[in-house]
Image (tube, rainbow, N blue to C red; front, side, top):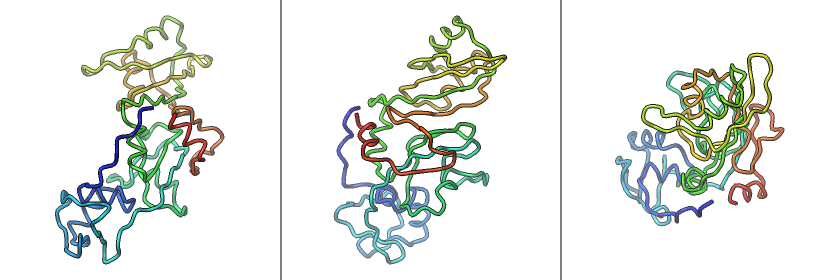
Length: 244
């Protein structure tokens, strides 16, 4: 994996609050609009105001905002939850799985759509997250996908060749048949890039319905036996896996 780009000390005020692990950028914008944020003792109402994270004193409701401890989590995301903190439609979110845990503000590292499940990373370390998400890093993501079809080798080869959807070529690093029975089958699909609903869109061009989609690995990090809806901290060994 390529090395992350150096951290720039200056950032917009809304982004600074997120980088310090205080809240999301959207929540920061609301706090700033309400006049609850001060920089150097002065009320700041412009979320784009450039601040120095190392030197500027930033407070919210009179309390100084300081960098939280770095947290790295893996979650076995259940189907039916959206990967966001607040949902305007009132749907359940992945943060429901974190209730009761003593955590600073953390953000998802990438996304899984509502109908998808499996391994999701969350962290308040934005540099680490951006390094994993950078297309140049080519961190592989492995999925087990149940489809409403029993593909033969010819069909699998067509999947491997990819398809153009809305002017965008969708491909996978590899597609293999895990098992097949009756009218359904399980595929293992590996991606080294993250495009919106990539697997569903690719298979949809062949009129193949996706019944279940489970992310089982990111790089060499495996979902393993983590129970559905449960989260845990990554070990130092697991962090090293993601860095290699």
